Length: 535
Image (cartoon, rainbow, N blue to C red; front, side):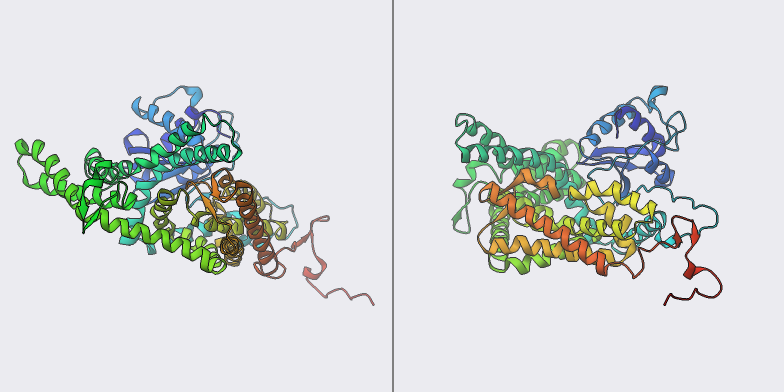
């Protein structure tokens, strides 16, 4: 476990090439995100060996070190302090470049939640005693981790497309907003619980205001992040997007209909900020410096603002309404089937990176209805992954290194983060990835069935999943909603486990290749004639 953020930051900095190689620093819920001048100067293996590092990720232009929730913010602050000081630190705060402590002993690993495609650190294979027959290398955790990394690298190269680039940009716009969505979502849940129990009536209006204020102004934050991501001036992006939530738009009529504050929501804000960025760039490329200071901001706000009012807000409002209607219809009409498909396909979407396209959809539903009904269904994919990993753990009980990897990654899986298990266990093994999808499909069908029966399960924020989603559940009464969601998780665990145990591994995969007591090959594997069977 990371106990001293400054020591961890001091260990990481030289392994990413030193201060001169770091061009930008940011963090999300679980990852330290770095911009690097020269990727070749990074020592990946040594980074994975640093105590507390759960894995490393390379996603487009950013290099990400997975540290886990809560910890990443403290390490990022210490990392930025070291950068400002030129990378200097006290001798006690530094760790050796190989990830070991000053006494030469390895630091321990701590599993935790992460939200990235991770190549996990794995334990070394156990050296067998003399005279034993070891299992093939393909069955060791090291080999599986290498195979998972190769699969991930090939997948990344195959999907380096404009669509993937656009999805990464969408993620970079919305991921920084997730901590606020989580905090406001939990406060909203507390306010709802107090209201239902009729407790503290004087406090609930204040809690409602706290939880609703961010959502009322989320368009401004989306506009700010969008302009920054597309190379514009962030404050101009926020200014253009602010018109979407300004109460005065109720006096504006577009296509014969009066606009409503918030119409179009985050989709309208996203489109407005993108338009504003292109207008700003066009102006800066053509106006001389003396006029640029005055005219560029004015034309950016004026042109993109008017187009937002008279075109984008109306169009985005129609799209947002259609998304809400479609999500409700999907679960209330075809709930079991929809849950089966969504729960079963989400792991492949995560593997391909296409799940990022769902972030604005979730945000739109939360903005419209107060919760997203899709997230609890999709969360069942993680349950199937956990069940599959547990079955591998039970079947391959003689593979010590692989079981160590599963033990370290399971806590993250229980919190809904399946990537360490995907790339470290199920995907390299092959069939367990498919049986994990079967478990996710079963859990999704369970939640979808209850949606058809009138028990809607939603989440007031995005980000957490698995057991971490319970405080954010919404829909009907919390107890009923939590019961349905918990039942879905248990269904996903059970089906993922059973499908993997009976169909996800080759016959004999769990058998030892030597007698564990005598450390000798089994009689059937010794050269020479087989012993006669007893009559």
